[in-house]
Image 1 (cartoon, rainbow, N blue to C red):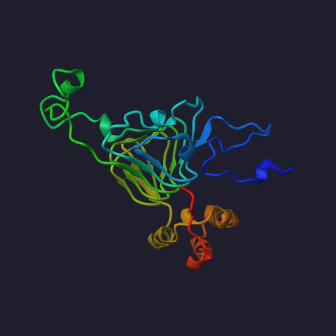
Image 2 (image 1 turned 180 degrees about the vertical axis):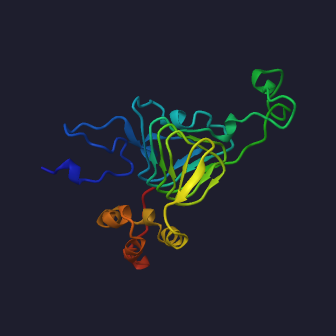
Length: 231
């Protein structure tokens, strides 16, 4: 009999965490398996957790991202999204460059297209790889969060966040960079999240440790079939 704890789940598995009694933890999902939405793009092994798991994870995480929205929400691989996180995408916006922000067109009085009270299409929201977003954080329209960023609980994040930063507060500010400029350049170059999962697990200690040079030395060669074929 195979011990299920020794098996690493596929990125297409809906509930990847197995409890001691053999059942699945219903409050944690791999989002690539949980979400089917034309404007929501999510990478392999990115997960979200909720104490009251929803039937519709896309609506819980990004309530203003509609099927017809012009913008996209893009989240990379191996991201960790805590309970209560929300992405407020551009379709939530009202026009705010005039006298009133009231969306008259939403309530009728003619076609919506071309109406003065409708805002122009807004920017995409982009989250890099290996980003940890803490409980209750709010990601605002058009945010561009780099690889390896840690977002503190309850933070309100807008604009560009440099790779491997720790941000917190409202509005979120950078508390510090996690590594030196040179180390960050190495991490951005080796892209460990693109390695095959077997190679990632083999070098788990280096990936979760602080020795950037050791991790760089573990980078698989291009001719070793290192490209990760997972979505």
